Image (tube, rainbow, N blue to C red; front, side, top):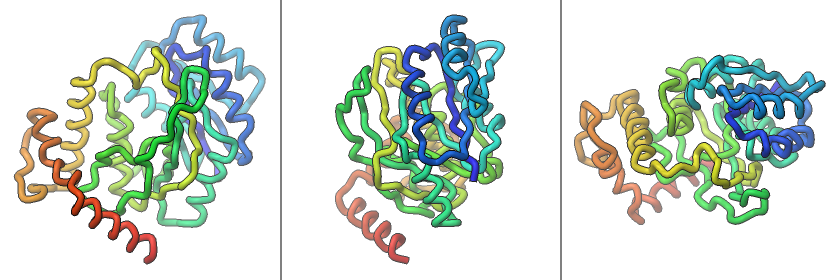
Length: 278
């Protein structure tokens, strides 16, 4: 199996050397790295190109103008030639066995369409701060699964051929494009959790996903969830009617409040245990 590392770059070149080095250290050797720059400053683009110069495993492309993260991540999949693809942000790194562990999961379970693992949040210098504790195996084949609270986060890898059978990534999204992708892939088959840390997530002031627009972020996320409800042809959830038109994030998130209850969580864990045994 060939693996394609997908890197959406926008003015993060000063951190890219560590990302690049983490790819060179991979124990699994059959990989390529596709980099798509979203109209960064020239100095930023040149630095990335200098780092990868001479390594034919790295393919570098540029958007003619800034198109946003949804378009860029969608285009990366189109450019990839691997059987399995996975995103790595240019300011983050993966551990040496990350790709190997993902490939092994797909080889061991032919029904798997997506894998993800544990990750650690780090400071600007990649010094570990805290482990992401919510990561765990999710229940498969559940029409009411919306990744709330977030469990599928990093290092997310998936079969390109399965992705091509979905509605594909919404190129208009500026936020929550990843959640949109995960839910579409979840609907196509089995999701497998790798119970190991494979990803180091760097927190810094220039991070794309670390923004101050929380209200806007919730609106995007809620719209992604509503879209999933429509794809799945759901009419009600927990006895409440699902709106036929999107109105606000509050209305959508209120529908899912029951999923935070202790009885629901216990029942969900039992279902996950049953699925893992059979």
